[in-house]
Each structure stands twice: as structure tokens, then as C-alpha cells.
Amino acid sequence: MPSPNPAHPVAATRIDLFLVGARGQVGSALRRRLAARQDDLRDALGLDLRLRLAWDRRGMAAHADGLAPDRLEQAIAERDDARLEASIAELLHRGDAPLLVVDCTASDAVADRYPDWLGAGIAVVTANKRANARSLAFYRRLQGLAQAHCAPYRYETTVGAAIPLLGPLRDLALRGERVHALTGVLSGSLSFLLDRLHADVPFETALAEAVALGYTEPDPEDDLRAHDLRRKLVVLAREAGFSLEPEDIGVTPFPTTGWDERLAAVRATGERWAMLAHVDANGARIGLERVPGDSAFAHLAAGENLVRIRTDLQDDRPLWLRGPGAGPEVTAAGVLSDVIAAARSLADSAQARRARKAAA
Image (tube, rainbow, N blue to C red):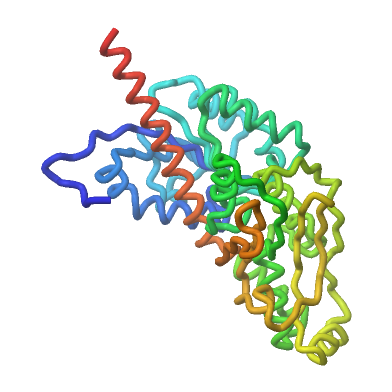
């Protein structure tokens, strides 16, 4: 994109942001990125992104003119649920600027609110897998509400952090290219654990490292029991055109003991262990598998994800997508990309409405 010409600045459209999970690892990383990019986004794209309301389990802050994203601690107050709900209601009904909710939590309670927000025409950007991994009926309801009310609904980082996975799958469907099968390492946390285990790091030490780096879910058992991985496979499969329910997936949890024997077994054959997720016409499954030493799945860096996609046109030579699949910074970068895309859509709609009003 050409550099903006300071003599001809882009007219800015204000977009109000409501950030949930504001001081978690992803939320904090997102605020730092937003603070660094606000001026450039206003000048280059005409997006005046204002953080109007920030909320987490411990506190909240709100300001009509916008909060400084990188100085939130100075504005945060103890959470008052009555005040929080009043602030949310005020945002929902003011109507003086388009509203975009950004969910950086792993909360079911926050996901419960998506239908109300989308039904009110409010954009939602989320890194929270809980909504799209519920029943197929709930997933379709969210898609329908977003379309019916012209509310951008973006969730690229729910699978693969900042790796572009879901967008390419939607593009395949739009051009009529059917996906036959998906196979992938979808858990950055388990990818990290396996890399460390193959390096003879004790399991408990490797797990503590993954937690410290922010690779795991808030409860690491969510990763080890493959609950989080199942949510990712549900979302990925649905975007690829498979009508899966969560209970349709056969899941074998990640083992926490017996690693000396497992590692000795694969070393004797030149293989590696990988926690793989599969879906095709015959069903879906998740579990630890031995892969050949020359497999692409055997050579992932710690925390990397890799997905192989077989389609009508890409079968003998499948499509591969690879990159870092965990970590607050890379996830926040992906969330900001979704925020920018949703904000541009909201700004285009707002400008179209102003043009129609002026012509009336």
C-alpha cells in the first residue's frame, strides 16, 4: 500500500472498542500493539480506534473519549458488576460510533453474549474458541446473525494463532474447491511439550516452561486432556465444510507419564511423536501418533503448528500451512489483524450510510 500523503490525510472514522480480558497475556499484548499502531492506522486507513471500555475479572475502565491502551493500569478500577453492565448498555445504545467487541478470554460466560451483540449489529473479534466449538446449531446461529445484521464476526486466531488457516479454508469453499481431509498439529502448547520431551527435558519441567511462556490455556489440563485441541479441530473442520459436533471427535488425551519408554521406542526406529488431529469423510480423531523421521510433522520447532489440506485440486500435492501456533504476542498480532479488517468493514458501512443520508 502506498505511504499516506500528509497533505491529503484520510478522513478518519471513529470505531469504539470494547476489550474483554484486558489484562490477560493476550489482552495486554494487544493493547501494546494497538497503542503503537493507533496513529498509523488513523493516517493510513482512516481508522480512529478508540478503546472505550476495558474489562477483566478483576477490574474495569471506561472513558467516553477513549482510554490510552498502554496506560490502562492508571485508569482501571475495581470491577463493579452493576457499573459494568451500565457501561455495556451505554455503549450498545449510544450509536454515535460503530462498536467492536474484542474478546481475549477463554470464557464461556463471555461467549454467551455473542448472539446479543451480533444480533444488535455489533462486530465481534475473538480469540476465544468457546463459542464456535459449541453445538453446530449455535455455530450456525452466530454465522446467521452476523450475516443478517451486517456485523463483522472474525475469529482467525481461534486456530493457529496468527497463521492464516480459516480464511484460506473459506476461500476454498467460495471458489467451489471441496476439502476432502485435514491433518494437523493444531496445539502450540503440545507441540512445544513434544519438542522439549524429545530433547530429554522432564515432563513437569517442560510443562512449567510452556505455562511460563503463555503457550497453554489458563488451565493446562485443558491442553493435556486435548479439550482445547478438540475445540480447534471443531472450528477448523466446520470452516472446511464438515458438519461436526464436538462429541463426534474421538479424543485420546496427551500422556503425562511413561515418556522414557515412548522416546526409546521411536528412537529405535528413527520416528518422532506428534499429537495429530484428523478429519475426513470417515470421521475425526485426535491422539498421539508415531510419524516417520522424514515426515513434515516430525520437524516442527517448539510451538509450531502445521496443517495439511487435501482438496479436489490439491490432493497428490496437498496444501500445507505452517507457523507459530501459540504465544501471547503472536496471538495478539493476529487479533489486531482481525480488528483492523472488522473496523475497515464497519467504516465502509458507516461511510455508505452517510453518503445515502447526504443524497436523501
